[in-house]
Length: 413
Image (cartoon, rainbow, N blue to C red; front, side, top):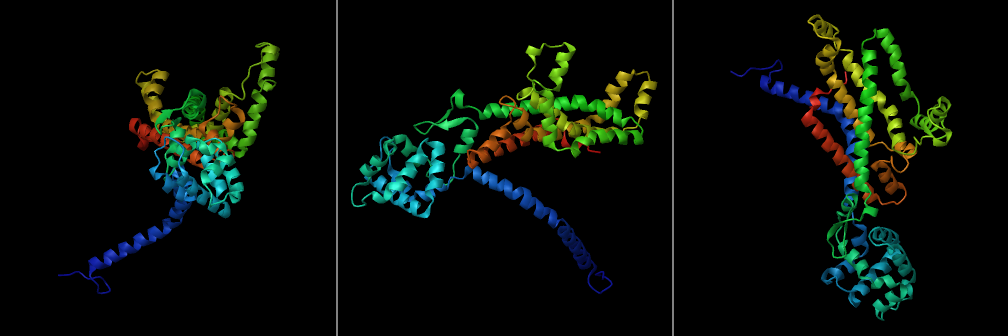
């Protein structure tokens, strides 16, 4: 016998319809959040990944040249057919005003390509298309006779490239097209990655050492007093990051407050003032201060929920104060410590302003290199590749943390 609902429809169909309506309503409620994630996170991330391998400007500007170079052996300067194809492509690029982008992209791989392309486009109208093209190109610029330039052009025949990732890892193509390590004078990205991770680990350690006692004090105070003291922890959030960083410049510089105090106390001589800014020390001190609240708040939220009877019970059973803390209280605070460590480490890896202002050359992060390529060199492909590798490094660190500690143990309150 089929059970019927109040409106005469089968009960099973009515239940399925009601459940389907609930799912649709739930989906509609989270649609704004999904749209925000898509526009604010997924699309920029996808654009960054695409830019890191994008190489369409070269084959799009030199289609005839790429086709003519398909049979080139790469051992000597190409023949007349390749130069005639290049003539057609550059003539079109000059009319469509796309030669600037082509020249800028080639210049990353071959120094001098910008002037080579620009000079040729300016004088290309003077070339007689009925006469041989190769001698005319060589009269315009001698680099047209350089085999290395043509190898660069031939190597960029695809719309996608892994060159930016090779450069991010301090690798490059040699003249034969093989992948080799760059010389030490030009190997800067891997040391910057290592420095970023190392300093971020030290910053996380320092914030844990300084933040744990503060959170312990707050967590064991009456609510009214702890709320009052919490204002001091939250006060940096109400102050501009630029102001806080500039304050450390005033404090740590050679003629700053701290050095003056040490000289006045007789700890150091006036001629031997300590350089504590525009180096690694400045980055460590300033970023530890700035990120300290992100360690204190998760710890305080967890400590506030730990009943005091646990340590009292351990003391009543004969444990010393230190033993009760080490075996009872401290393990209960590990979820908050893990949450604070994850927050501080991930935030410090991606910091830019503070290392740029107080880090000098020895205290800068890989993020400063990314900003340089975004704003100064305009090599957005390399900047995107560096950003992607940084995202990959953070993801690997997260997976290792999840494997060793477990993300499910993290508690923010």
